[in-house]
Image (cartoon, rainbow, N blue to C red):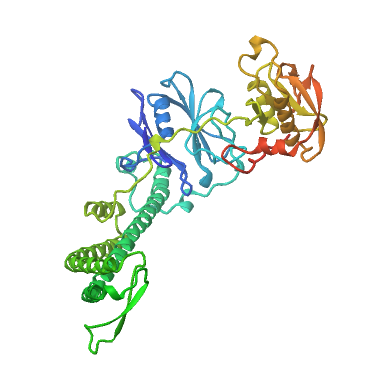
Length: 500
């Protein structure tokens, strides 16, 4: 296996002993948004320079050394299922290639088509993601009709100038279609990747060039300011010679300028927080600083100007369409013009957490109240994510989210634990809020132990029956709801889960 981040995977298969045909086949799977594809790789593929992420490592752990049992198209769509046996873990594993363009993905499956890992996790803010760790794989929307005619190879891809390597070796039957795909889409992907790399390089050089120009212009202004050094010294001498005439706390003073013809009056600004003598000393210190700058700035300015010139040349090369961005990048880093590119290491990223069918809220007494996200999630919450002695709440005679008030892991051993009345009221408020009765002033809520809730055979998602429990009349308190719905660290309520 060869990982080709960010979206490609190369699977290397060795033929069994005595089998006809090539000894090694390389199958390319690409979930690239613009050039998603599956084909035999016949050209040479250099090693990826990027670090691999957790998905590629998981695939390597689960599939390296396994035997490919079947490769099939799923539902007549752009979905390819690779089924493996004799895996390192012993159980069957599958790799689903969703070659659906912008939403393409690679999904690793275990027995029962449950998702073990996926290359592109769903957005964190997506309320009901199609794919989730531990969930059963579901096909993407927009299924292609099985009978839809695909364009012919000669119509879709131009004839390459050279025959595939398999043809050169005399294996004309070895997937010529794959060669056309590799030449067309593979070349397009490489060109697009090169274009993106050039764009990224240009931006990096432009940022450095902008800073270098700012530095050069600033040094230019400082060097020009050193021309006033003699005048600053003269102002200091005027102040030192007229200390008795300068009132303490004055913001300015007007003195005869002995250094100008005719001794005209000269207005000199002062620091009112300093004494007259300290103001005079300040002018002498400024004079010395300007003199030092006059001696040092020309060399610094020459270096800054040279850096600007070198970056301008580098930018010119980065803008050329035939340039190799990696080579230009390396040269810029070696010359000290660019910093080494900083990219987040995907190996340090945590794999996506399994999706939970509920959202959690904290009651006044610190207990957890779980609210189902959807009708199907209500069933999962009530029957797989709750203990028998936990309290189950639901609005009476109306649909809505199931709410489970957790009473602690030891509740079953200690018998039926009764929650504090405030905790129970909090959970009842959540049941009312996540139902069509939201906004009502009062409502009736069913309260039962989870072990008293049953799922009738064949009932639709979310529909249950009760063998016990009681009704609770709730008068809705807006301030209680506001406290419950305010997420920690935030000031506004979170998004509401769906109701059945």
